[in-house]
Image (cartoon, rainbow, N blue to C red; front, side, top):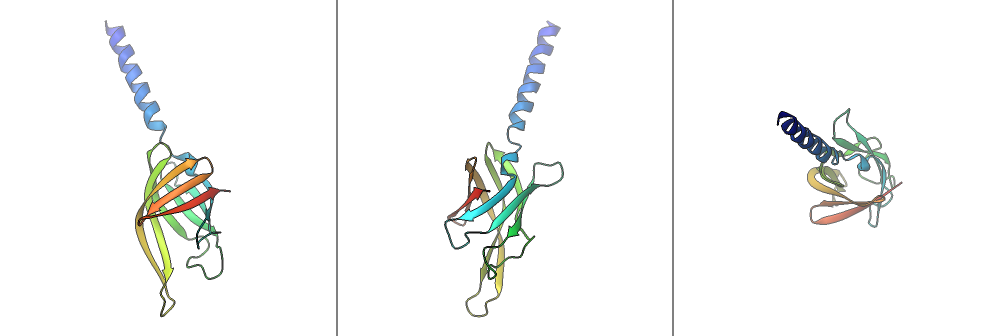
Length: 134
């Protein structure tokens, strides 16, 4: 009887560890290029923070010299897996004021969804931003 109890407890532990490991989120790691809008050409490198399941998106190439960000700047932060091929995190939205031309920046909560192995969609502020894997 004790053997059967230990067997079932072992199966439950294995099942829980397998279920939680499927959301490690490593598919988001890599180089992503923005497509389909005025920010097209922006390239973000997603890296894992230490040994945690938390990721950062760092600018590796700007689409043009007037883009309101800098190389090596963090634009995506605190990205954490929430389901298979889905993450939540913060996105730094950038823009320039019309009158003074100064850069504005605000952090917004975003949902990241890997549509397939080469297409990532970010949902933020009622808009969808598309990214392709490089």
